[in-house]
Length: 357
Image 1: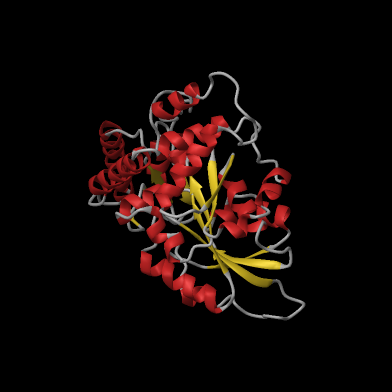
Image 2: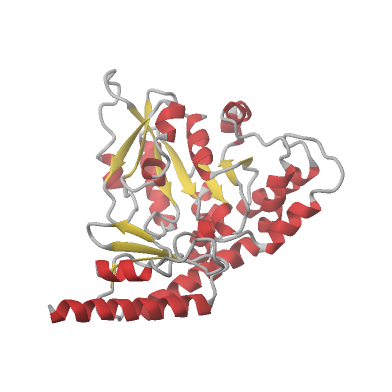
């Protein structure tokens, strides 16, 4: 019988499964003293915004919301009209995992492009920039990329800059879903501004939940003037927290100092540890470069079934028998070693059973 998901075992399904970092919980507790102005007019929120601006090295406009779907949808909706379209990859979270939220709430259209490694290129995007001025067609107005991508691959500075140049040439905005932006920073060895707003990203989601926050994301506008109406959009979108200080306190804890980077660096290292241990196991085919905190692999279906009796992880592509193994800030070396040992055992057993038939 499968173990219940409520046990204390650490799993490899998603970094969303991890708890909150103790420092974040302590910050929430510290914010719970006395009274404070509501809806973000408090000192904690002011400090949290300043800490994020310091991280980007620019006076970017920062707005906290409850979750990543809202951050993506409201950020784009505030800048685009309902008849306009967003170009994204066919595996983009915006397209696959947000239940049509952009189309429903913004009224716009998503134009998808196949991206085998999860990353868009100028050539791929250019194939979707068409029917400009044709009243019968949704008009391309933005490019949306995910950093790191849904396949755990990281856009380089040059790659983001190339997409930005294409966007400028065609009058498009460049949006970045940064749910795992900290993991990208750890991989690239760069501050976030160097590969986002500094190279032409206009609207950015800054993820916190996957990096140790209890709950909260941020929407960032490189040009504060572009955010002039976002307060209204956020309120109408039901994402304005009345007791904002409890959301903001988490960001202050994460981004004052280098906790955000330590958490992401550790998660990435644990993924590398897992990759190194399974890459040479016969029957395990790693399908993507391991650049952040995800390992994608093909393993025999029977091994998937056996492993999932004890470990939870995502079957990414059932037809291809491709799985995704995610690590988090609280994944330990012992967790990885136990999981890698189980993978080797079950895959080897599946291989042997197949050979015996």
